[in-house]
Length: 300
Ligand code: SAM
Image 1 (cartoon, helix red, strand yellow):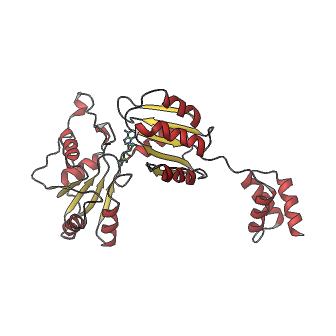
Image 2: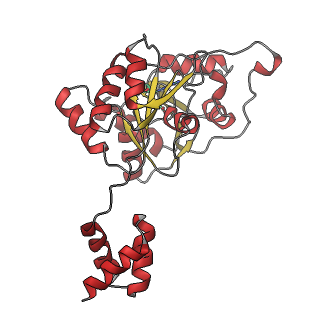
Image 3: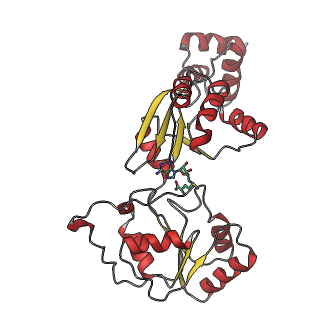
């Protein structure tokens, strides 16, 4: 599903940006584009779109529309369609242009290329050929959702779209269950209620989760609650638009004498008994007295 660009306001600040009159260096320039609000494009992205010799896009109509909104003329430059299944011929055509020293701007349908979007095969081929490549970073639904979620952001795991086939979907969720990071998934609105219900079973009904809908757009909405709560809320109403689902990390597994012993065996190879007891008690969140006693027992 493509992001619809929202043209905002009609005040003078909406006047088209004047791109810098700087030459765009040769090479491939990945360009991040808005996930909703057209004004989320960066000035640098506009410079690249205005100055590149060749424009390449997952959807050429979307790119033309974005350039039109921002008053960037095509000026007779070629606009080439490319996605990761475009085939070897199209890839070779882009690599030849790069080898000739041309500057190419690549934009996917919305947000950051390669993030559940095409661009990976191209980046890999350009890297392998040793040709120049850079990125004009910008909007990405996963990062925008993480920022608004209120869930821990120190470590996160972007899982993309879950598979739609039942079996593959179950093993996908089982693999995510123990990941010690905030989980970020993309999902279509029509499968959201089923996904939340399946996650309540696989990951635990009380795990905290957040659903972000229509980010940066008019009907932006953030729903928070346990997986069971959210599954109920979403099942009870019609959900439309673009969705990111985030889930808090799994609670740490409870420490047993066995897991404490295994941790001690590892650190006792390099630490004194006292230091090992302190380290393991802090890492596993268990009383130092208990850990110290287990350490002494293991010593002998
Ligand atoms: N490359 C994009 C990015 O950087 O986020 C993602 C492209 S992927 C094909 C499209 C999915 O991203 C949507 O189905 C939805 O899960 C998520 N998404 C994109 N725009 C969104 C928005 N404005 N609000 C919420 N989710 C969005």
